[in-house]
Amino acid sequence: MDNQAIANVFDELAELLEFKGENPFRIRAYTQGAKAIRDLDESVADIVADPNRKLSDLAGIGKTLAEKTETLLQTGSLPQLEKLRKEVPEILMQMARIPGLGAKKAAKLHDELKIDSLAALRSACESGAVAELKGFGKKTAESILEGLSIAEQAAERIRWSEGDQLARSIGKHMEGCDGIEKMQWAGSYRRGRETIGDLDLLVVASDRDAAMDRLESYGDKSQTIARGDTKISIRVGKAFQVDMRCVEENQFGAALQYFTGSQAHNVHVRRIAKEKGLKINEYGVFKIDDDSQVAGANEEDVYASIGLPWIPPELREDRNELKQAEQNALPDLITADDILGDLHMHTTATDGQNTIREMADAAIARGLKYIAITDHSKRVTMAMGLNAQRLRDQWEMIDEIRPEYKGRLVILKGIECDILESGGMDLPDDVLAEADWVLASVHYGQRQPREKITERILGAIENEHVDCIAHPTGRLINRRPPYEVDMDAVMKAAAANGTLMELNANPARLDLNDVHLAAAKRLGIPIVISTDAHTIDGMDVMQYGIIQARRGGLTKADVANTKPFKQFEKLIR
Ligand code: DGT
Ligand code: CA
Ligand code: CA
Ligand code: ZN
Image (cartoon, rainbow, N blue to C red; front, side, top):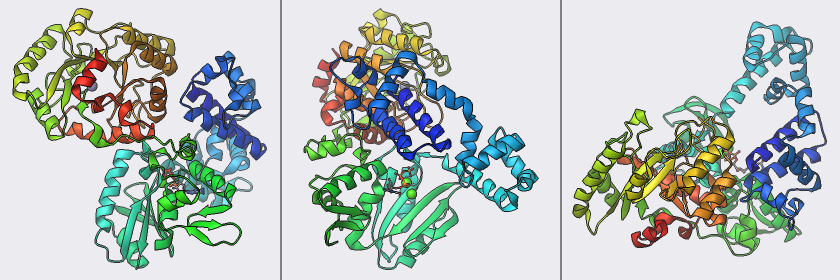
């Protein structure tokens, strides 16, 4: 079991225990443990296997959790979890999660109306069956229906790139509103999380009503959810919520810090403050003994007041950023300007829409010094993947084009070569040997068992011609989970073989994710941030990769395509 799987078990356990009305402190121990394990940049299995280390030494993991983790690793399951699962059917959990329902009512609906799905619950509410149930009534049935809608909407998180579009559009709409003096986005959007639950806007306004009116007049607004003196929430489009809060100038930094979150980061920050005799909330930093204000107007001062440097929002997940801040060892995070090359792109030879020259010109326009043309190999029949002959023809073409770009852009002869379902590469070694740059990808057989997929990727890593594993987990955000793969084994093999790993910057992929990136960094695996562009505009997604890289704590030195070409070349030899 990998970290993610173990963390999922503890989260599920916590939820089941909550349903059973278990002691909140015990429940919290499980959710905290789940977070600690999920955020860990090394394998729990390795720590357990190391006789010199103890799992319970990790922050957030006590003795009980350590024991349960060992059981999980040894047997793949937990008797306690199996038992609870039998006692509490999944549908009960789903119903209990609906706002306004709770465990007791959920159980009654399950027992008396034999509700076995959320769809069945909806129709039972609509048919009047729920209203007739003793202790329920018409009001309750209505509020359950409302809760169902809220639950459905809450499940919809949008990708960061979509949130970014919306935030920019709203920002533009708010511009020029006379009542607004200062405006900034906070929340998960500012932290660069790969998905966004809602958008949080902070403003300093001389005329709060004018500021709120302005937001309410946003073109795509579908509803005003609530409007008070300082806060307004609107719904945009079908379901997406935008919150705006008006704060005082001298509170702006504290509010920004508070509403940027994450909540876990803030809890930890407040604990540090308390140890120093200070209290932090959204209004400012105050001395506990006399309530006098120490900071509040700007965010740097909020952190400085507790003896810390300003922490980049991308790191604020309570992973290890506060420890690093305390030791003055925060990483100097990579920025978009550091990128000098793009090593994954497609052309008209397969499923891309632009020619090699067009891609090359677009790369120069974006300030790049080198690119690799990496069309698909023949297995990808849908994209008319290249066989050896067509690939060699393309390389001849690149030979012809190169002189035109001499001194301006290096064009590498690359290939995105499929890792076959049966294992092995889609093109023969003698062809791969001629390439300047070989990406290896899993596109087919993504539902194979974990051992099989892991073995296939390990095979690619061990192939001396493979330079880099592209989109290593295959996930599509909100659409397709990662395939089952032992990432610990993959990363160790990559580190041992000097194979690079890709951070695919496509906003639907962002693969590797932030936690994997931190793990790769720890193992010294060079990361390549690539756009996988299928058009000229496709090159603009690099920015999303940069944000994810920052969340993984990567610096310029951790990313191979920040190096000048000569140095990059040494790395792949
Ligand atoms: P999201 O919207 O689900 O993508 O994630 P966030 O992080 O934007 O969460 P949101 O919108 O609920 O709240 C924004 C930030 O405000 C959050 O990161 C931390 C802070 N915050 C909100 N509610 C609470 C709370 O009840 N306690 C604490 N400590 N902080 C809160
Ligand atoms: Ca939010
Ligand atoms: Ca919010
Ligand atoms: Zn590709």
